[in-house]
Length: 169
Image (cartoon, rainbow, N blue to C red; front, side, top):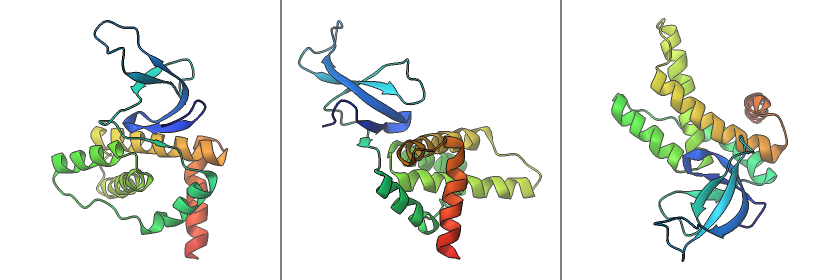
């Protein structure tokens, strides 16, 4: 169970702050069921409701600063998806993102950056589908890292590269 003020990664929806727990007073909604009232990290004026006992959507607390730094050091060892079939690859992207796992999000990011380089070398652009999943995975992971490392989201890729480069050199 999460507490008010906790930041969580909420499925493929990204980072949210737990504001409260409540019972929804809506027709057709069980009065026995508690819901988290959450505020999206990137839209502080919105509200999202999620069942406290949710089983279909992955939700986890964001990493600590130490966990984030340790995760970044593992980035070189995270492999890429090697799936040639477009539909199967898209399904794999969806599953990785839905998992909320930083490793799986980074796997999607690394795979798509590699695909982007390959397509550019062939004189092509990244497909709209690939662009969508890259933006989604980067958005979720980079928001989390920016939050816990207290830095602007735009600085996260360079920060990761710097740490990865230092650990390899």
